[in-house]
Length: 383
Ligand SMILES: Cc1cc2nc3c(=O)[nH]c(=O)nc-3n(C[C@H](O)[C@H](O)[C@H](O)COP(=O)(O)O)c2cc1C
Image (cartoon, rainbow, N blue to C red; front, side, top):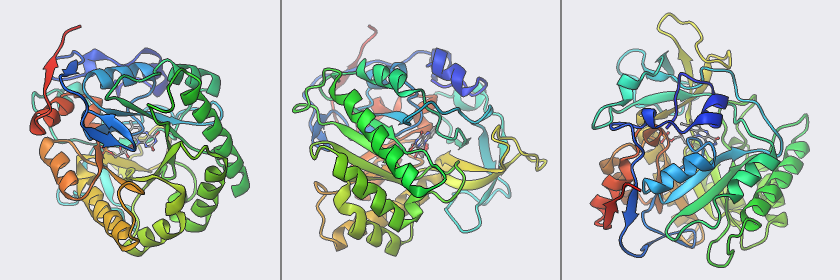
């Protein structure tokens, strides 16, 4: 879908690109043959599988992913105002520096990876090769009038398909400015999802708040429990109780997960984990390659699956210790899911729902393979 040789703005304006959808350079289309039998935060869906915030830049990308069988599509994180992307390049292929440093785990000293341009050859195989990429966009956003009109064009979603709208507050000089801004964008997002014709009773409104951007100045919010609690409490106070909220977070130690759920769990309906693994990313020569001008950014894809599994076990254990049911707090597994076997490992690890970003950027055959593995009947259509 995404052409890494073009800028983010070009991808937003002209994508998704079928010539970047492999192996056949066409967007696959599926039709499910039975009523949806899985559930995602109160909505019936065909598969417990989705795309997290990121690869689906706008409504055209969402439509392509839905048509390919992705049941839960997350619209890329929006803000209360227009926000520029980091300059190109944002996405590069990454590999281990010493040949033995993958998988990547979050650590006090960020792991170091070698970056090179991502070419079509690397992602075009019949069976997609396991790839890991850098991801350094800085969470760009259109102005609300543009993204809200675009979101409304997706409503009401069809039966068995679910839309999640991701948002985040923009930092100011003081933390209170971020809270005010997040409240504003939460309201804008709710309005977009409820005034576009969605039947709120049949189609729950589902938002996601990104607390885990690795590409902004300062520590990601989810690592500061006090600030997270005040932000999530402030958002809950302004939100219609019918509106569901997912918190997108990164890696934490076990006691950090316990503390997060004990203090902030009542303000959210689900945890989505993980975002990218914060890493040092340079060319083989040591040169900085990311357009942001920084040697640091997020890594996602194949290399971060074990970190996802580690965090999944911590979140499900914390949920159990706090005696919360999956209905009270769902666990969404994100990170490095790029095959049917990894999808099933995540389900077996206790995930209520599984999502894949990198794996769906250049190959949309995973939903069909997952449907087959779950014996969910579908047909391939050409219309
Ligand atoms: C191109 C791209 C853009 C992303 N943008 C966002 C974003 O705007 N908000 C967010 O919460 N996560 C964003 N992410 C992170 C993903 O949601 C996901 O957490 C991460 O990529 C790990 O999943 P994966 O290994 O399947 O790629 C982005 C990821 C990619 C690949």
